[in-house]
Image (cartoon, rainbow, N blue to C red; front, side):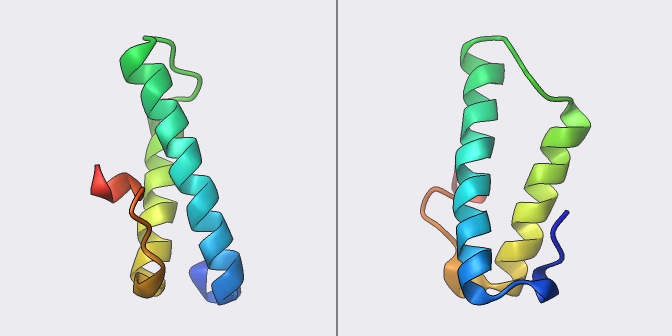
Length: 69
């Protein structure tokens, strides 16, 4: 997991964008296609990283955040 304190604002924004896309992809694979590619623990780690970044950079929370679903 990326330590939010080690990131610049631009890096955090980029990582949040990538996490939103990655989580959405894994949600589609799991729910729509019944074909998960990662374990529940790996998925949970993505969500935890997203949550930590959003807590550290609340002004960067995206409309497509996994928490917005």
